[in-house]
Length: 145
Image 1 (cartoon, rainbow, N blue to C red):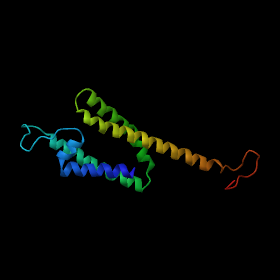
Image 2 (image 1 turned 135 degrees about the vertical axis):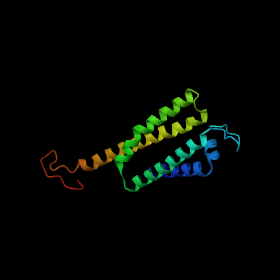
Image 3 (image 1 turned 180 degrees about the horizontal axis):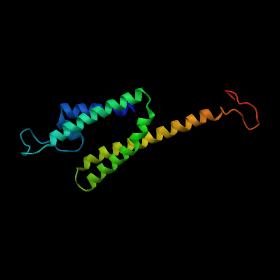
Image 4 (image 1 turned 90 degrees about the vertical axis):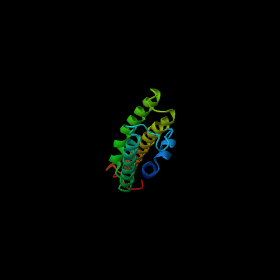
């Protein structure tokens, strides 16, 4: 999760420092300087979402360093929702096809996170399975048995 956090924070910084680069990465065609129509607030929204990405990236890194598993559990359904919303935006032509990659990134991240949490839970259960007070024969279980 720390890797995702670093990537999110880095993309947030790119959006703040070089918004046209981020637009290109997401499949949008940047508008040349001075070419925006009156009332075009694209850069305002890009600034806000880039700042949110930077913050989110830092949250992920800090949660990873603290091994805050509950945080990662909470992200799974919301990242799946983000995947669905972004995918629908592309299908309904509200966003360019290149934006599908953003949705798929979120969906893949949710699946990988969910699978990793599930695997860690199973490993923890297996590790504690041999520590029950009594085994099937009624003998006291010992470590390393």
